[in-house]
Image (cartoon, rainbow, N blue to C red):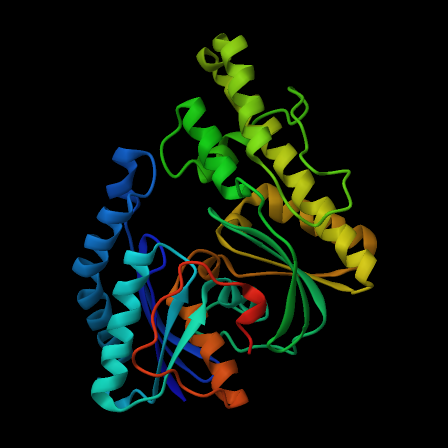
Length: 345
């Protein structure tokens, strides 16, 4: 089945065409350069850019595949969670496309798309799903950090999530305190590679508690107080690298420890990682080493599908359509907040 998929939950405008297990085209228009001036995503600006970018991105998908709109068999779009005005652009465009051509339409959960993206193999365009096994899944992005118990295809439950700041949000806010450009996460990762992760001691929030929830607001505040007391750190190149390495080590230790602890408690032999922060090299290396030491299979989403994109939405739609999920009615709306546990029906 050829599924046309749309994603506009934050600041990436993306459209993809997925045919069964294959991503034929996955076009993303990034807004990073525009939001850099403001040090973060401005919802009103993001929405206007989605309006500007959607038609060219859609045209690029058909140009890249050589297919025509008449060959599309179904449509899917991110329904939530996300920024409501941004979500609305892609969601309504997808609804309109489906309605005009009398095609089935599904509105899908953004985090559910991330969750199952770990079970693709190879890089696009060959992204077929492999056998989905019971696992503990870490979904970590700019706005969300989740631990999920995946029991089988479209069968999952949330173990824990973000209480305040997500891991990606902490990366970006710390980067802003240091004076690094937006988006700060990749900059922290780059500098951390040349720093000493033991140079400065920062807290590991909720590390010793039995909860599967995450809290990174205290870590961010700790860095702010540290810089107020030690302003000279920002005047030394190596000290900045050491600071980035120390902060990153604190975030990663919490993420890895909680993920592996949950896997051992639930007696699963598989761990997955997805979401934009899984592009972080330090996190990928630490998860790999921790899983190897425990004999646990690790699946990390291909970097091309880690950040927000419509390809993962189209692949998830294939799972839902194969299960026989009923299409949505045309007057259904976006959901800015939406429990992942209610996404699989």
